[in-house]
Image (cartoon, rainbow, N blue to C red; front, side, top):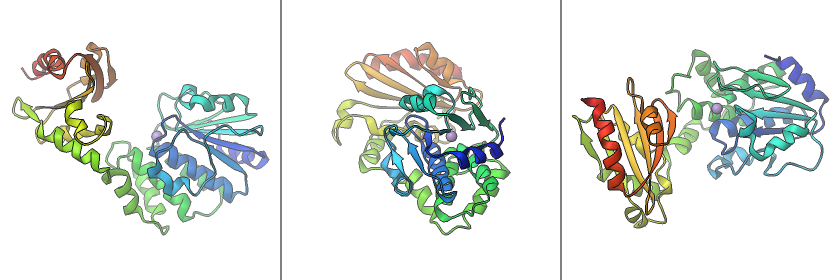
Length: 318
Ligand SMILES: [Mn+2]
């Protein structure tokens, strides 16, 4: 692993610095990029942050930094990739990485391919934002509320507010230092995790109304048809995460959500806990994912999709 002493040297020598996060940037990618930009500003450097269509709910960070959606014209002498496990995840910004004089890859994904000239990959870190905090400590600049806000956002996002097992004593130690700065950390968590558009709540209401329970609540299933969704707006796009609500049912081991995407296309989302491997089941239907969170698409009606997958799920509890 390369050292931040080198990175600081590279920053001091650079004129045009580009910072980029992965495609479809999440709270950690955005938090880490904004924090890095604000640190560079404190170091007296010119920078631009490249992010692909960041969600406007992060404007409380994005409004503070120099954000670009396109690669700037001027040649870049230092490129810093954050929270990005491989080159492909840089999307169109890959070109700027290729052209840059010096490249750095700073990340926490265990699958990171060390694609830059200099690489700093710490898979023990909860988030890329946590690593940016480590970097900040090396720079000798002072913390301010905007840097704190950015790093805090990335950490709470990737740990799901200190819930996931990637939360370490060090993570909490950093968070405790960050909230010494005067920013509204409750508001960040409310915005990121609690607030949702009205239509999302309305669609969740339909899905919760459609719940079916099998095997003494061990298997929870629900559905959403286009027809049901259209009562509230166009399509079934705003249902991301509803399968997690199903999985929160007391006693449930596996949850399945079937969402109709078009007349004959049903998207399956699966969640489970040990020892149930839903990735294996999703793969049988041409999908994939993680052991405890997976998905697939089946052609047919909701009823036809259910006929195919339900026997396979009920089998788990025989
Ligand atoms: Mn991350």
